[in-house]
Image 1 (cartoon, rainbow, N blue to C red):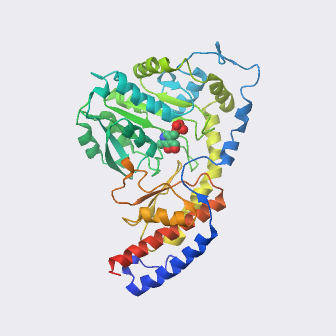
Image 2: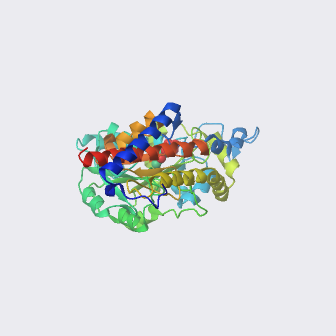
Image 3: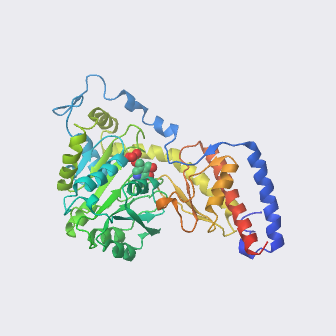
Length: 432
Ligand SMILES: Cc1ncc(COP(=O)(O)O)c(C=O)c1O
């Protein structure tokens, strides 16, 4: 049946639903018997993407160990190499003095920022955050599970705010942020995980301007996907440090990024961009636990990219590998689910994920059906604080890592299971 001949499930009679259920269940059993063993769980680069950076393994070449007057083989330089900071400052639209280059994981930088604030207080804190028993944090949902794991670990009560096409409901964010026990907020401004959505200029402006109850409120601005385009153009990176400074809240944004999904996920460079005073605060704390980051790897990245344009060209090579996987995912979802009105999915212009919204109350069932057919998905609810999606609706699809044929095969299974769960739910609704 083509998607144009199909009717919404809600219009099907009990008998029609039963016929459809029988067909889908038979198809499901045939697939399950194959024992596929496919995996769409985590947003990792594929081997072909990692191969794009293979040359890094030979850099810097023997004898090439000076960056200006710095011998990169030695201790020191918590700020990171100026040469690399200059390249990424251009990409993140900050001044090089507003950027530190660190070790390989921006998640570690985020973890450190919150730990330092808890133990020592921020530059604006009357006391360390840990002394406030009642600590809260705004979480845009669906969002990144590892963000939520950090704030959960450190005892913040997490306050979810739903993402819309342009960003969160800012009235709600402002209302929550007026509470002095709300210390901060997670945000992925560009091609967010998992929705692929980008915050509008208007949302960014309101975040920069809003009044907060806590004098030391911080937004962790995780620009993990700033250059990860799936189309020809690159997204405009909002100049949040300037915007916040002009609005009288210069310290509001702690911006992080990394080359994890540019070069090597396990051996890249992470960045922290903030006002100079904030960076000095970070450096004072981080400088106690390290005498400096891996500058050899930073120099390797300088040599590898050359300049910001080198990074852009490299990201276009990534796009050539992964954009077809996103297109194949879209086609597989449309061809199986189109016309039934049982699901919707995001069509991102960048990033690593597709957010599939299924019939309310069926996401967990879809994930378990899919697992039974040999396709592993991120657990339903993972994109919500405490792993609880109140509507049991969202499923995160990560199509970058498997080869193209496997992506298509896996998404076809996801779509089949989405439809099967929806049909069974509709049957239950009709009192079967
Ligand atoms: C939004 C977001 N932030 C951070 C990370 C991890 O970054 P890193 O490898 O720099 O720790 C990811 C990885 O999926 C991500 O989706």
